[in-house]
Length: 421
Image 1: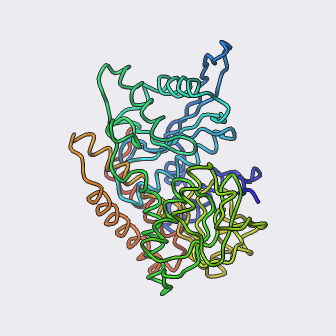
Image 2: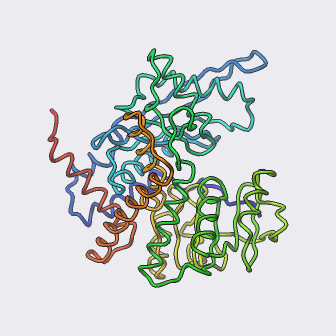
Image 3: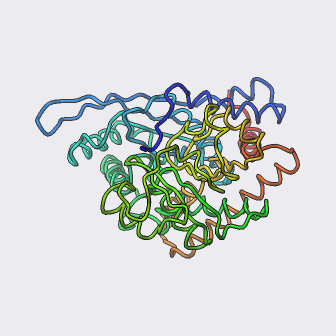
């Protein structure tokens, strides 16, 4: 069965705002403060004409949303996907604000996207589109204003193109304008694994809190890409967990005895998907409902909904993706005692190491991978402890606690800076 897609009936921006509203109500924020914190400060739509390989001109639509710059430059990825909408990007930008605040790093929230299926473009067409987008936003992007990063269907290559385009317009090499770059052009050691490593750290922390051994725990991973694949590998190698099922756009496979993750990673690298892996059998049902102890949704948003949440069998849901669980699903899972580690905490490892990369670029001094990983663990453990303390004090879910921590940090900065009029 192919990996589940985004539920088009569910608006991610509405979901993000509902999550915010519930936490804001617990904090007793008045209507004006709620509106100020919830609304994006800036949203842009770009028309991006590109000369295709056959000489024709095709116009693409791009977006960039800055949700907040109160705590620092806007920070957030750029995704290339045929289903991207402005609401998607606005929701993701808001989640980035709260994610950076939970992680307690000096960034605000931003996000970008281009409506395109990159698989339909040649390499030269993809580069032209990426550079056109970067050039069009060269007055928005900058180390002190808005720092992009990779997201769905973008990676080191696209970030290098963006860095080069911005540098050409600035007439100087500016590494710190973007993160997630190749090591040779100012990237950070440990960046590629950072989001998956953060998922692994959060799973370890919640299992310790609830007294569930990680060794031998059955893990199902939806999305076996850069986040899910790394998380699966680390949970298996470092924690002794059993990866019993996984999926991606090619299909879904399972093995109740445990998949050989090292062999599976090699298979995916060779065949561009998990389908056909000899060490597993095709999965004919939804991976979200697979019998497991820990579920890692690491694909796209709106995967666990009010329609299927009651059939989720995991005790822990670790959100490797952004927005994979809707508010209706949250209530069902919370009522059943399922521990949902929210995206703004669980997958904040990526933006944390993006921050480390930005710092290294500004200093011109680069850390060894061990140092990056040690600093990441310290940040993630502190963030988890802050959220867990709020859970205990407020008797609420991890998600509401994470939002409460984040909102209070952003609000405190607004109070200290005052209101410009």
